[in-house]
Image (tube, rainbow, N blue to C red; front, side, top):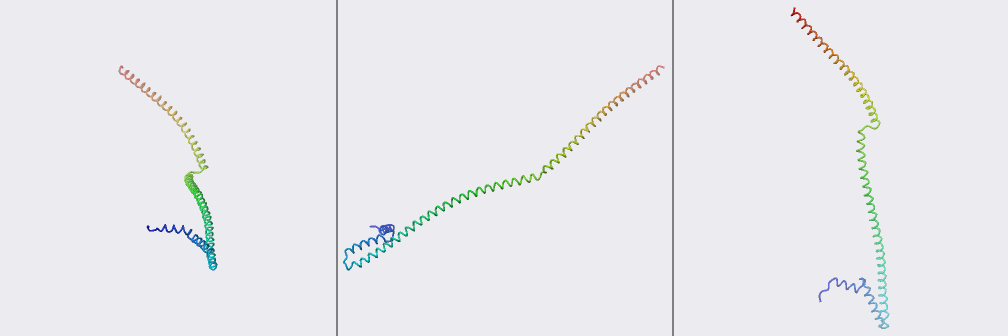
Length: 201
């Protein structure tokens, strides 16, 4: 037959020895000892009986140890389940905190952006005068505009008067020129008549 592998040896030992503490072997030995005690002679029975009691104590001790280990494993499993639950709760709380922090970061960014916009608007507003100063300037400009309109009307009236006076002056000059031309024409005619009369004499 071929060589036996380590895995097969370990598997056989576990099947024979139970959990590795030798309980099955002790029980088998105890049964064999009990059978041997039943078949033993009276003088050998006491020693065999003490041996069985010793083996029984070892089995009870091993059983008690196994129960303690089992209870300890149950407590550990309970602790692990509680730890798992606590970890899950911690993870859920961490996710909630992360979500809250993200919201706070977004809000902080929005506030910062609004402040920057407010600063820009404030700088623009500071470059312009306030409302009262603007109203005073508008009133002053209105009064100045009214004065200019009055001055314009006065200048237009004066210009109209000068235009009329100039028209009268042009008419007078034209009449005077016409009169001078008529006088020159009469003088010329008188001179021609006199010259003609002198030539006939």
